[in-house]
Length: 368
Image 1 (spheres, rainbow, N blue to C red):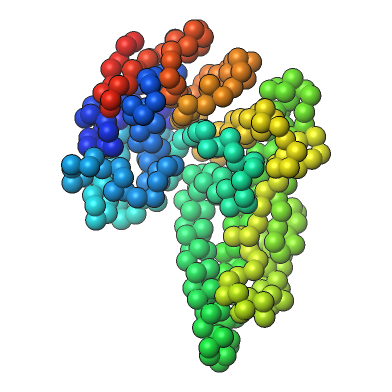
Image 2 (image 1 turned 60 degrees about the vertical axis):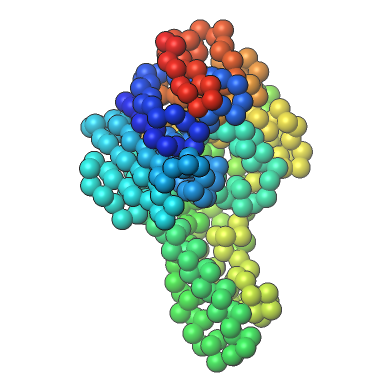
């Protein structure tokens, strides 16, 4: 997969322009707060219509404009395709290959990217929700069905939690709970099984990447931590039975708290280095190496599942890595189209073989 061009119109602080990248490494440099990250964010939006920085479309529109528009031409699934995303204060309009779409999910399986931002470096130390989001984002880009299943699960979860609060006031409603549990556990089991499968594939690759990055001194692995006793080899049916039983056991507590005590929304992923949970024992350098390995593994799994390389977006992270890690990273991604933002141009030969763009106060100039 590769981007042929992307046009930005009224988007954040960027002047209206069209970016025409090369097939290899594209460097986007300039001082802080000039608009470099906005360029990558615009590309990322075509993965599914969501920003990696904000949930508000209003923030994406220039303050004195009524709309913002992105137009992307890309090669994917062995053909040239187009996508348009128009954002207005009241919503958005999405077109894929000239046809208007009802939801942003239409972009899934069409355009795929992997983003590596400074926020990812704290993935290990943050709470379980961050690690769940990391895996869920990947499985949603891999397959539309996963995204739809996750949406349905979250919607049912809110409805079940609302029902738990109502049961306290009207106990007769307890009779209807089994219907909600049946639906929620069916979806939850499917999500957990898909997460486990993806994590298994990621671990196989991350182990190799991490040994390369750490020069063989560290061993990395991932472990799925279930809130309802799910085990790695459980099939979907077994997972559903375990989830359903946990719902029954936790009902009294759940009615007191008004929330569902266990499920896909309560699980965690342990990132283990040399047999220890990195959340509590890893140094900053080890955290960087682990997250870098996971991002490379994510790209590798998506490449295998989708049959083509994802577009790689690096937002101001090369400066966080030493020269050896930078070299390893660029070598592993040599077959991908890569976009890198940074404050200064690099002397590295690999970073100067492609195109270079300079950004200042929202204006973008191609230097090479």
